[in-house]
Image 1 (tube, rainbow, N blue to C red):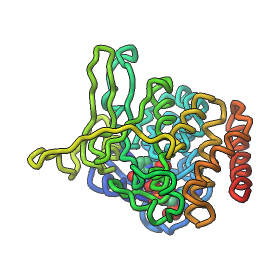
Image 2 (cartoon, rainbow, N blue to C red):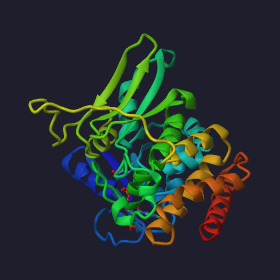
Image 3 (cartoon, rainbow, N blue to C red):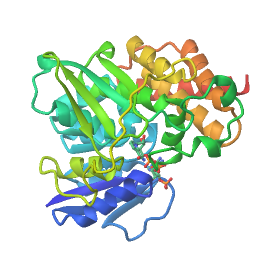
Length: 352
Ligand SMILES: NC(=O)c1ccc[n+]([C@@H]2O[C@H](COP(=O)([O-])OP(=O)(O)OC[C@H]3O[C@@H](n4cnc5c(N)ncnc54)[C@H](OP(=O)(O)O)[C@@H]3O)[C@@H](O)[C@H]2O)c1
């Protein structure tokens, strides 16, 4: 029996995780947390807002599923990594922002870090059991979001409702906007760098509009392994929660009877600059990834509130990154300071 703490239980990932936990007798919901929505009686231990590490201290779970959105998920990520408690990580922002600090905590804790992000779960499965020297490069796929193929002129006046209409995935509002700007793919490049220890020039992004191919790994002998499946987050959630058993799910296997279209294309980095900006922040290192994430969170919130245009999201992040020092964080205090500073600068850029 594995005792699971689901953080962000009221969200898109959290709700699907509950379904997985309920359908597996070997999984038990030990604790649940949300940011502000009530969750009374959902689990033996619950918490709404506040410091989630207090809930984790009381719960002592076997697995933490971190499905909180944004930098707010960081303390829970570090809590699990530091203690060697298995971390099923959907909250990519915490790994992107904390980077080396998170990896150091993982090294000390010695526990498992299982990605829930579909591309990273796919890459993890293609890489599992292979020696690092066999791997040539990693290819992360993306649908391209609702605005794939549009020009910058066509994006000037898009409304939040249009950005929220994702063609293949049903997700929370922040990640859906990130998918429309390609900031999500940028965060995923950074996430992959920290998860798999690959340099940035060996992590590529390619668009695959039907979201059937989730990731590919190229090996040094010229072979490429790909992970395919219908776009359904219950697959990577179940994989992480039941690892290494790979328990059954209700998701059907791929059906080829009607044919299957698998087309690939390059992302348009000029129309969607956040992908390249994220990569550059990663290459700069230090707290640049943290600042990228913070500025993006501020800009996306402003866009959803109608205070910023769609194109203003990337402009705000670019201006913020140009203004921060990006110095390396020695500890969590430094990181929290870097996050706060980037947020202050981004808020200023919004009104500039
Ligand atoms: N959705 C997907 O398919 C998908 C796929 C891959 C990765 N991810 C990643 O998974 C994470 C969650 O995404 P989502 O789409 O599930 O988001 P979501 O639907 O917006 O849900 C976010 C969850 O986080 C909770 N939360 C927000 N702030 C919190 C705080 N300060 N303390 C505790 N809980 C807090 C929310 O609680 P309230 O409801 O009370 O506000 C909600 O339960 C993100 O990092 C995202 O990038 C999601």
